[in-house]
Length: 346
Ligand SMILES: C[S@@+](CC[C@H](N)C(=O)[O-])C[C@H]1O[C@@H](n2cnc3c(N)ncnc32)[C@H](O)[C@@H]1O
Ligand code: SF4
Ligand code: SF4
Image 1 (cartoon, helix red, strand yellow):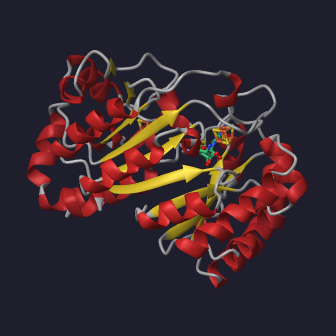
Image 2 (cartoon, rainbow, N blue to C red; image 1 turned 90 degrees about the vertical axis):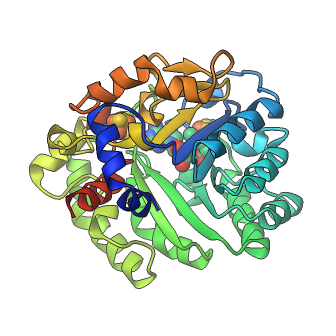
Image 3 (tube, rainbow, N blue to C red; image 1 turned 180 degrees about the vertical axis):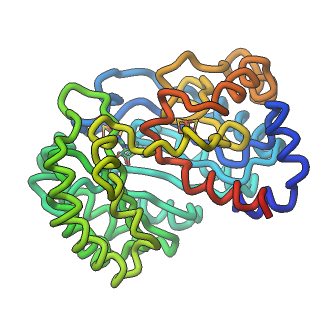
């Protein structure tokens, strides 16, 4: 989508890129709530309880985003299904004809919620499953019946929902040995693809990988995971399974959390021209990985347009043309950036 959109508007995009002016907020992530019912070891959201903003606040933001050309909103959190008025918001997003995707831990999905998600045509749902083995998933997620509840959630979604289902697995030192079994489970649950995400180290419980662990992953686990994923058509490329790189030096970089393997030493990230992240209080950041930096603006005070066009945002766009610390560990936009660069070179 991003690639096609930019291909049609190549001249305008290039000019915006050079002048640090925005293109369009084509894809916006909305972290609806900070609250969560799980206690995942690699995540910080649950450690803080905060109050939610009223749905009208988010509906106004969505209306403005629609006017600015937004094509996709991704709902996340915390746990987005804990946001009390989530379906009112989804209805609003769908009325604006914006594609809607969501990441959820799946544990709160019951018949009624699954039916509602199906009726409202959420196009892609990502469900987090951190191991095909119940005990490991429950340990990582901090709830003893999380696995059973998530699997039940997936079954219900499949009953009412025709759209794409992706299994997200955050690969960390506690669960990497079980990656070889995840394709079987994903296939049996009717998922369309799997997404392995290298863990970003942000809690005391989860530490960096040791080199021997990543060597073991590449030699003993990834080959099976890749072969099965190809057989079930769950991935398109080897890179999606060999997420820590393939060479010795790439694995060494991954042990430091530098999962981008130096990509941003030689390429810009163009997320800041087409993407933004809005948190549960309406604060705007450039992307998920930069949420711990000072936010760029506050939607309680300014409109999205004012923030998107602001001098602060322009400065940040300029800064992110050179690699920043945050980018070294981020693989989230590499594929999209490659596609956009390919389009611009044509
Ligand atoms: C923050 S969660 C919010 C949505 C929902 N609560 C869930 O768990 O799916 C969004 C995604 O980030 C992943 N995630 C959590 N902690 C992470 C970390 N330290 N590094 C990378 N991804 C992480 C989750 O597994 C999930 O797929
Ligand atoms: S379920 Fe999602 S938001 Fe909640 S603690 Fe786990 S990763 Fe974080
Ligand atoms: S590479 Fe990642 S952290 Fe850096 S600007 Fe892009 S999305 Fe954000």
